Length: 406
Image (cartoon, rainbow, N blue to C red; front, side, top):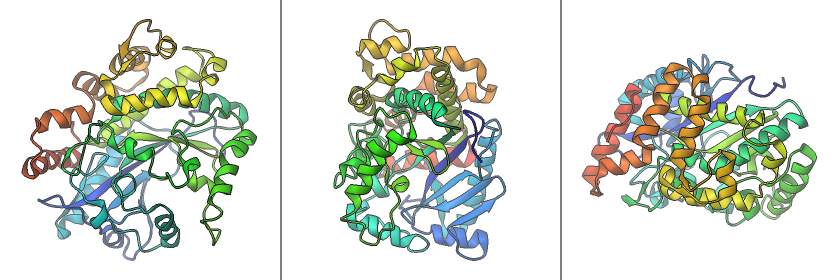
């Protein structure tokens, strides 16, 4: 069934499994799904939420079981599923850990690819890209899926999403620490995301999708070059161009939806869903052309937007934006940091959010992105014991569905 703009949503959340108390990653998603289902399957339906495996055996995904129109009760549903999963993992001395990257994982020695359903595809990916790296095996994100009905709706939605992508890490960055040290990036996940398919650059492009606003152009500019580029590697012809497209927002014409992928996972589902709700309301503003016209939105080249994005993944909400044309989109006429842009957008759409979502967005705007709060809590002490202490608190925040305070 095809839905119209903003009629329904699909939300996906990824979490890693770690042993308690040392937080070492534990690749037992197959045991988790078997325990829940009675036999191993790659997807388990749990009422309105579905659980599934990912590329690596230590990451589980929870997602809305089909499209939903209700964002209001979604954080509670996800939180109930977090607690259920943690209960099932108890006997293995294991828990879910939030944030978009494990702070101490060695992906070269600890990566274990999923060995069951779809393993043939994952093995081929590994052969082409070598998935033993942070950008592949140490990444957790939230994806938002937004529907479009036809080319006219796709044009509006794609134009709006492209324009918003560069500043999303300013709200959602949560991956400042890798290999037991500060990476220099508050959103290190997206730093790795940019280049983890460097063998076939067209798959990720410039993260920001190209200026294509209908299905025919999308096929010609994005899908056809991907299909051509993968041919020498995909000798068994098992990879689908929808699956291969790795931009920061991917268009799924097989289900008439655009999936936003630049959002780091937060410390709990309430924060995730609140961020999703805010992003959706801002996209509605853009689609209604209340900020700038559709033609102006379409005029932005991906290189211009990528330059902004590339700065934002370093300093998140504290990034100073100097591009006057970009600032003018948000009615700002002098240099401003990304936090100021989000505050301005929240002033415009905050009333459309539920009280619960407002509370969580206001917390983030006041206290900083999760990456900023993690770095404050670490206070420049990157000893293993201290990292474990801070990230154990993050695991508690996930279990209890509460915000992380430094």
